[in-house]
Amino acid sequence: MESSNYTFKIEVEKLTKKVGIVAGSISRFDNPRHTLQEEMCAEAVKMILDDVPDLGLGDFIKKGYACCYSYFSDILEQQQCMHWIIHDYLGLSGVPAYRVESGGATPIDAVVNAALWIRSGMFPVVLVVGWEKMNELPIQKVNEAIAIAGDTDWDFVSGFTYNAFYATLETRRMHVYGETEEDLAEVAVLAHNNSLDNPYAQWPAQHGFSKITVEDVYKSRLISWPYRLYECAMTSEGASALLLANEEMTKKLTDNPVWITGVGFGTDTMRPGDRPDNPAWKGLYPEDEKIWPKEIPRPLSPYPDLTNFGSLRVAARMAYKDAGIKNPRKEISLVEIFDPYAGVVLAGLEDFNFCKRGEGKKLLREGVIAPHGELPCQLSGALTAQGHAVGSTSIAQVVDVYWQLSNQIGKKWGAPGRQLSNPKKGFIHGHGGTGCQAGAVVLEV
Image 1 (cartoon, helix red, strand yellow):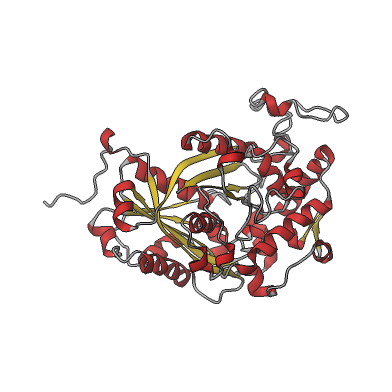
Image 2 (spheres, one colour):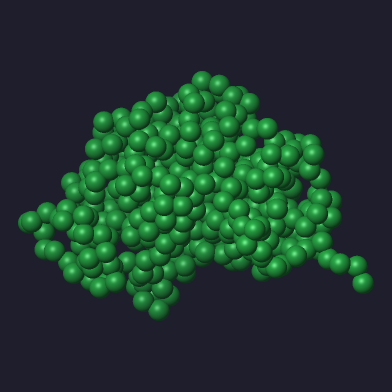
């Protein structure tokens, strides 16, 4: 009997700290794409193979590589276990693979899982592929399919969709921190105008290449106060892929690597209403608990309350510790925040320790997160403008940061003026639900 190419015995000497990104790709976001999931994924994988001439799909079975798949909803796909079909379509039958599923956190968790596979020594190379098809159902059914990622015994039956959830969270931030409708509109303007040079982004494909203003955001229709249409993620179709490898294989396959130096993940209660008086958080972050307006009744757990996302704080701190980052504000060159709604950007800036609690709006107003600011954010356009093909979203955001760090924006976007000057480290986060599951990744040249 021939010995298998795959060894599942993890030996201590095989454990590796360094995981490299060899290549990344995006099959453009739009809605509708008039393209099957299989074809979008194949397009993304072909882009990877074009960038890595020393790699072939046959290597996956011959050399013991693996695949990690990401998509959000069987309901949206109108197909159970769609990853089996994708795996077959790519010609990878027999190659070890599985699907990650964690709501909106699915794609970031797929990246984290793949990186940990490599660090364990189990696989030298892992292909990560994510996609979503969101035009198979009417938009009302799409919203329902997303809403049942909430508690269907309590929240869903009370009429809560995610539009209502996030609007509730933002009104709490307005009350406690003094954020304004103009702040939210400015976040939307930042993301949409950042997307205009991005050839993979949905917003310019549908709306053209003119910049928008705060007034344009105000004119977009109200979704759930305070959120208007332009402040909400787009429903999208598209795919993206990453090729990850251990240090040895990364150096064989590319001379321009970017390294995943930190990963993290965190959780919070599924029902947002359980957070203000959740004893699990009490005393965990005393520096944040101190920041609370005297005139507002103090909950049992002042942090995260409904104003912030505790899971984001846990994931970020874990990733920073993993990467050896002591001062995120000074060490990180660019950030891609998972922004299903504009206010999440302001909360995220706080939860990722880029500023004190309640000061996310200050970084926005002072231009810190502008394209040429101290901490550029959402350079791709993120969910509100690049698009939100859920199972692909955070993978695409990792690709966006990877292209910046590897100095490929001029080549990939055809917009050399959008390439940052000498970026060193990037941070990407993703989350599911109302922040009940979160993941974070630190990239470094």
